[in-house]
Image (tube, rainbow, N blue to C red; front, side, top):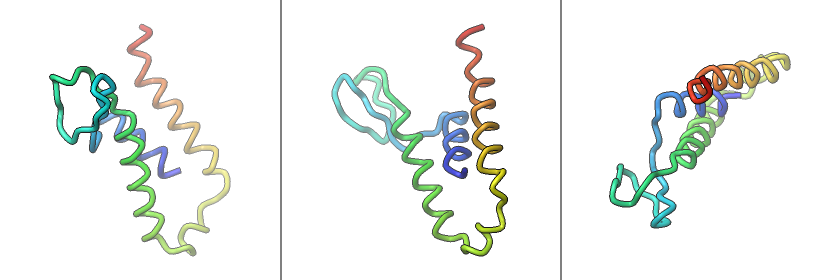
Length: 92
C-alpha cells in the first residue's frame, strides 16, 4: 500500500531521483537536455521501492498487523482514482 502512495507522490510532484534518456541509452541524475526527452518512470518506481523498503524495515510487525485487510483494497482504489483525476488533463 505504501508503494502506491509513494509512487503517486513522486508522480504528482514530478520528483525522480534519476532520468533515463532512451536516445542515448543513459541514466542521469540531473536534467540533460542535449540527450533528448527523458523517461521519469524508472525514477518514480525506484523512489517508491526505496521508500517502501525503508518504512517496511523500520515499522515493527505488531504495528503492521493492526491494519485491517479492507485497506488492501481501499488504498489501491483511491490511488487509481487520484491518478485518473490527475491524468484527465490529457483527455479534456
